[in-house]
Amino acid sequence: MNLDGIRVLLVEDNPVDARLFTELLRKAGASHLRMVQVDRLAAALDRLNRDSFDVMLLDLSLPDANGLDTLVRAHAHAPKIPIVVLTGHDDEALAVRAVRAGAQDYLVKGHVDGELLVRSIRYASERGRALDALERREEHYRSLIEHSLDLISILNLDGTIRYASPSHERLLGHHLDELVGRNVLSFVHPDDKASFETALVDGNNGRPVECRVHHSDGSWRVLESFSRDLSHVAGVNGMVVNSRDITERKRLEEQLHHSQRLEAVGRLAGGVAHDFNNLLMVITGYSHMLLDGMHPSDPARLDLEQVVKASERATDLTRQLLAFSRRQGVRASLVDLNALVRDMDRMLRRMLGEDIEFEALLAPQLNAVRADPGQIEQVILNMVVNARDAMPGGGKLLLETRNAGTPARDCVTLSIRDTGIGMDAQVLSRIFEPFFTTKEHGTGLGLATSYGIIKENGGDLRVESEPGKGTTFRIELPVAAQTADYLETSSAKDVASGTETILLVEDEDGVRRVVETMLKRHGYKVLSSASSKDALAAAGQHAGVIHLLITDMVMPGMNGRKMAECLVESRPNMKVLYVSGYGDASLPQSDAHFLQKPFSTEELATKVREILK
Image (cartoon, rainbow, N blue to C red; front, top):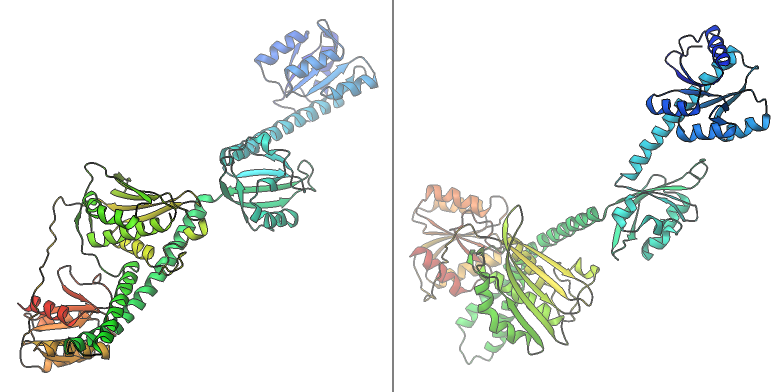
């Protein structure tokens, strides 16, 4: 039996017995065993403090200790060292008591041979090493569990918590003694109890179960849990549940899904607005031309004016849809939000009425932002109207500006805070969707438009609200890079006619005919084409000068921008006017001429003269 390297501490005060044990080991082939002998328990305890040993051979009758107390004291001093009792007392009851007190074996002097002694030492050593390895593994796993970010718990099959890892306190705020002994379902959101209880009873077969769990601060955290029934495993005897906090992940996923929904609805809204603007172009164009040629006393004039007014209201709706879909285009300039709010002060107070207290807190030295001032005014009006409607019994509205920033960029925030009825989570998740409204007569376009405008201006729009606690909208706009900017303004001009040649390209027949009629009424010669291909052919066949190209931006095949580039190469002096049912966001360059459908005869004539002057 190979016992090389094993260190044995022999505690024996009888020199004869000590020599006997040494000789027995030598004859049994264990001469390489490293053994140290002391004759007192005190000396043994002192040696244990200085050296490490694999096994202790302990006599129970020593000058400074006697009986079972000798074993108890030795084991208490070095609980990890296996002890083999060597005694002259052949007492079975004492042997049992010794083993219960921590002895690995009980050998009676006079009945021990070398083989028995070696075997006992080897077994004690191996058992000690195994227990030490087990303890290290337990410490390793305990350390993993106690420092894990996941929540690890052991439950009885009825849901009673038997063990909760320290991460419960870190993530849920509850002290561990508040958890142990309570039923786990008492912490689960009422709406999630059924699914969680089913997983607890039936097991979830490796599939995660999501549920909301109560935090000590009153909030709810979303956990993703995996459970496994180990009630048949000794030492566990219960359900092991491993959970992770996915609250932030769920929030980000919801933001992503919300953004994707808004993007999809925005594309739909933009397409609808484009097609509707083409129809309105025909309606408003012919209506205005009929009004221009109608005598003021004509009995049909009032009816036709109502048609014009209705088409103008429809035009406003489509512009809101385009703003939401972020396809309206931005005419940006440097904007001082403080000055903008001051200019709107009187109008806002009149809109809110006497029941609502209005206050504006404007930060000094507020940074300028680059945005479309008209669109920002529209956003503020939309927000204020919503705030007013949320405070039917009166309240307070606060507008606040301040400089802010993140590591990514500097920005200016405009907060609009009311003390109204607030919104629940379900309404909050949909407030920026077009046509969604909680008002009896609302269109559902105000906030959708505001969202699109702020995004198109490079900013962000956030909202915080709880039922009964009011609502705060926070507009974030990036700080402008320039320090000065001037927005060109044009005064109203008299509508003028001309005789130049204009190439008109429009794939919608109704729109093409009405625009052609408008141009001819102002004296222009019109070459009309239904596609880019026809326009290129018409320009190639026309021997004279083409002074202006008027083209739709979006057409089948070659779009208006590409077609215009081809024509300008061969006719460099030809001017270009783009028109579209969308906004001007897709213009080839910022200084390109643009007119958004629907437009009146006067608007078209004025724009054409402006370009051709």
